[in-house]
Length: 137
Image (cartoon, rainbow, N blue to C red):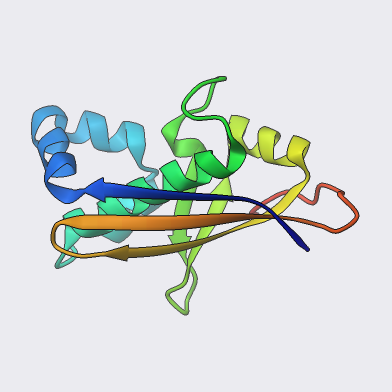
């Protein structure tokens, strides 16, 4: 496999907290999938976990080179944890189409957070032959 792109994003937890306070569930349901909200809600450091997923979504879009345009929805990028705890990206909708067009077979992510900030790094991988295998299930 070949590394084709890298993206990184940093999120201020207070800024995310303010957005949630201002827009409530409407904001949360527009940005996060039901599975992401289920994982984060009620956790000891809920805002930090949400901020980590927010940063991961931004980092993945940097890998794709798209930003939030071309019909992309926030929920087109979903971050779920494997049983080991390692986060895993699944792409849906327009993001999945773009990744397939680019021949990406996987996007690896790493997330870290503190009380004040969350950071995520994403690395796009392509099969050496350039064939698109799709990402996620």
